[in-house]
Amino acid sequence: MHDRYFELELMIEGLAKSIGVPNANCYFRLSKKSRPSREEYRRKVAEFMLAYTNMLEMFRGLDGFDDLKNFVDVMLKREIEQVIQGKNKDVEKRYNYYVMNE
Image 1: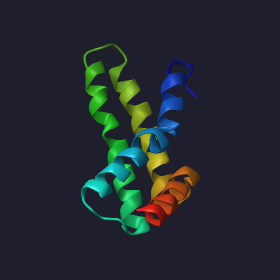
Image 2: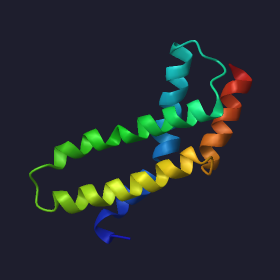
Image 3: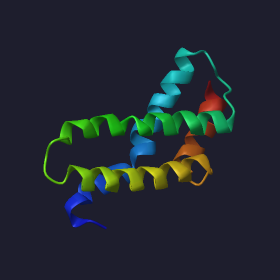
Image 4: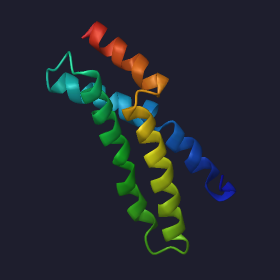
């Protein structure tokens, strides 16, 4: 772990729960899709998680930007793989809740 990016590491580990799931739920509600497939739901969560990379552009031009970008890319890839493979318990729980209550 990079001590330098400790806060970012914690944030990325919680990105599915804090950003991906709420936005995916809102997306499917607005799309009037109450029963997305589990795979479709996971992909949408991952898509919203990837949106974090746009925020990295705010760091462009600072010393260490390339190191930061590499760190975030590796962390995001790992967390997104967990979501896509169904290994993120928060995403799986929220999917079940969503399709049960919509």
